Image (cartoon, rainbow, N blue to C red; front, side, top):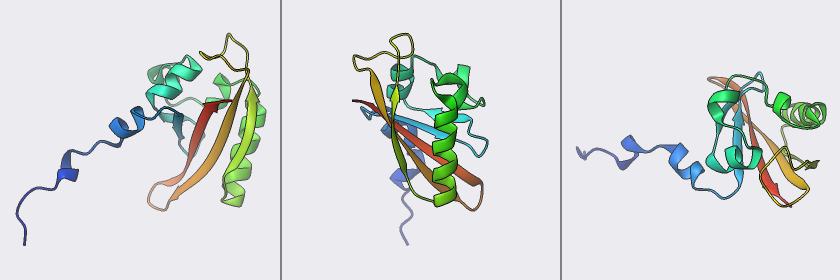
Length: 121
């Protein structure tokens, strides 16, 4: 048996996700933000501490449409893609829409989670 500690002991997925160029947001079962990588915070011009624990739809234009996509993804168990039209006051970018992919992630130990990917079009 190997007694050396695993390199995974100090592994932090946040460091990997923060390095991605596309936005990643993780929602809990109440659709509240529990994680947003640096790209998501920059894209949405929001900071995770100000939105953590609050429904993400409150911070998005067309929040009802977003909630509908999330509910559809959770019900079907499949990813849902759509384009979100945005105004310049909403986000930091140079396009007028964002591609949103809602991916249901189920974990039997702790309920259903939702992964939201966003990238400018």
